[in-house]
Length: 67
Image 1 (spheres, rainbow, N blue to C red):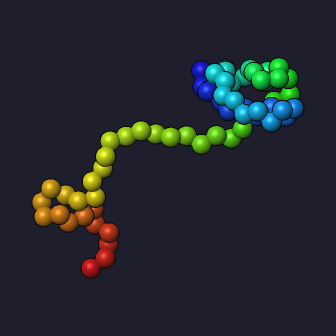
Image 2: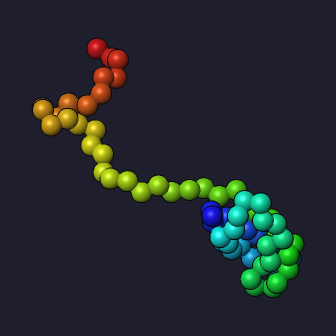
């Protein structure tokens, strides 16, 4: 189940909730109101460090198409 971000329309509290995509009527944990809206959230991805240079001479590892 994904984590969604919500905002309460009554008290403006923002919170995250682990819910199924079809679940509706999420109550605000601060005031208890079920007048909430799901927000459009950004996401973050963790990854390893990538290098822009190759191991042979320090030149860029891809051809940019310029002479």
